[in-house]
Length: 171
Image 1 (cartoon, one colour):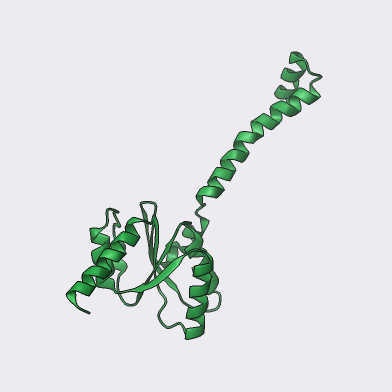
Image 2 (spheres, one colour):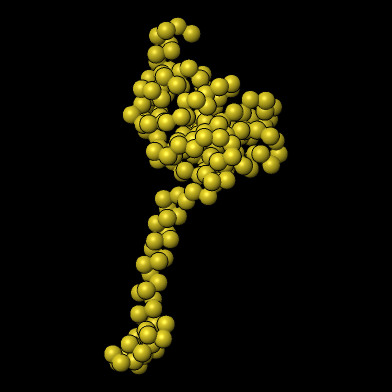
């Protein structure tokens, strides 16, 4: 690979990293062709970009990026693949699912919305992360709960202020 080609790859990686808040680094070496193909297909269906990268080029792209990857570049040893996604826990769920049948992929680290996770032992913590849509759904549910209490109190309180206050104080 020429110096110009390396510079082009670094620029492309830097752009990809800059456009994403969710980046996982994993080791998928040793997977057979069928398993690797299944992993790629599963990632594609989930909207996750999976690419095998050279460690030195990825490290230079991380340095050039505006994001602070903390100690994540220290995980760039051996074979490395990156998984770029919109949903913070989607790659972790896919890795966990594939680990039921094989000992790989191994999570090296992850960068999720400015937080850095290092090591395979962080996989369960990453799975537990909630997506933006899940958090919004919970907030809406919490906001609707008091409104439902008031409406039901109005209905059961006989439509009087005293009845409303009595019903709400009982709840």
